[in-house]
Image (tube, rainbow, N blue to C red; front, side, top):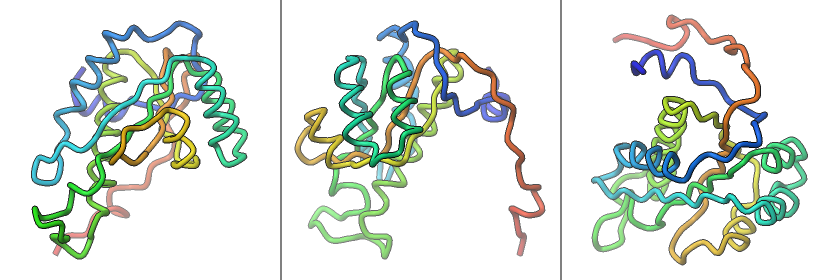
Length: 180
């Protein structure tokens, strides 16, 4: 798929077919996402693919901060990808000091780039996705046994789409850009 077409046609998918996404396909998506840019090529983004229904149920019921909409999406998705980031590398110098006034926020920026690239690669492979932002990151980390030194950046529900949402209205280019 051409890049611009992929960007323009990707939608947030919230309803999925029951069919699981093959692990090989998930690996191909992660491989594509690994080409995302990162601070000084630190490559801090990691992925935990949760396919186990009992773990997904726990995440939905215990880590969505009472947001029922996300609860239903997680339970209905064949897989939930926990996007994590290695803390303390992106935005830091070797001595541990911050490189810029953005301090450690670069790691979130890097994880965001990787998450968007992951979702575009998924779309290219025919896999739907939606990025979920309302969750208790500490509870998610506890439930999945996240590796020490990592933090949860995002949750991405994935699966084969069981809906075809319309494109949401977009702001015009003149509202988005300014030239000096």
